[in-house]
Length: 492
Ligand code: BES
Ligand code: MN
Ligand code: ZN
Image 1: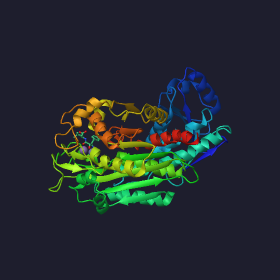
Image 2: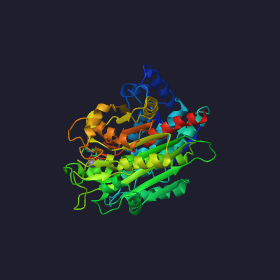
Image 3: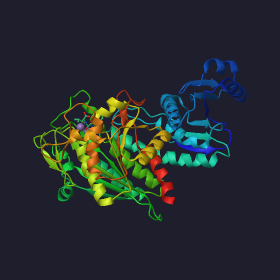
Image 4: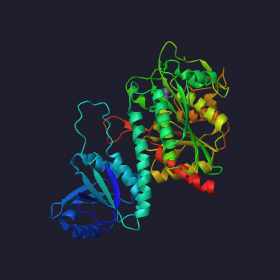
């Protein structure tokens, strides 16, 4: 399906008209009825413009118009959700040609609209063999026209280009996240990154198992011991051309391609969902690719420690003490608290070899953050108020929400070990997201601008795409919005 912009009123195909829920709705509908030659009584009786509400009406020449409710004061994420919901639910009924009338809105809303339309075409049924042909609208012959005014056109075009770039990357991350562990492993993530780096011109380095041993990434290696697929450390570095002293942002993402819990094995009820324990990696790798596509004037380094966490005679056992890349020793109390252990090496490697101005890690780290915030926000941990404000602003703009939780030193007690420099679990079922963050703080090595995002509830969640939790692509839009706030900084 192609998406294009047009400043002429669309005369072919069905038409979609988004409608705001305002106290002048009656007037809006009266105007629409006149414009479309429809009965105003029908529109007014049946349509209240609630978010996601749809009213289909037929004009005198048989052309179909959908009114699409936006609710009150929709933000970027609301536009995205409303359009995604409409296109996902209606896709089998849509004709090849469609137009959306956006002339009543600001051109910038095209970003959410285009992401929503493309998102509605996502198909979770990657492995079904008896699939019917997909909907005509989402096939190569499908065509969508965004009807905009001359004034909107430049803004709308920019927003459309950005949305296309983000969507195309995000979709690949959804597929990687939704792929089961017999269809992906650490090398799959490495191969994806190598191909992406070749395509978009950024540098990719993969440290294989032998190299991890040589460079002593003992924490990452310890988590991988129980698996027959080897671990890797993926380094993706996008450096803009012709920008003097660009700001350097280091992103580290947890890439556990399956988390059984290890010897501290998980209960089986929802273990299958642990194919998604690489949401941090997906956010980081996706962000580097989009930054390279958009040629952002920011130096972005993404590091992903990637491994499985499996059970085996060779697995790391509770009580084992392992030595991280930074030289610190970790007592492994619970092998299911493996994310922080591999991030210790990912962050240590970043800090020691790249000295970024800002360090952000993302991880599907704890069930406890879901207990605290549910599926509506990721946990944000940082001691840096300015960084917290910038990330929160990016969250508010994109609707990929963050909520700050404390990093007070009293919580350090929870990770004190009798035998090693620190331990990976307090042994108590309280404040688990915070003690995990305190653990990571040690490996930020006092970086003045470090933030940790616990995205366990946000990366894999209920969506319209399926009956089970599935990938959301969380973090890419957030981080790109954050990186864009950093551009201003560079140019100051
Ligand atoms: N990958 C899990 C966290 C998780 C849980 C992500 C639910 C998404 C949904 C992580 O490795 C884990 O197992 N954490 C444990 C830590 C505990 C053993 C200290 C947890 O949260 O229960
Ligand atoms: Mn775990
Ligand atoms: Zn995990």
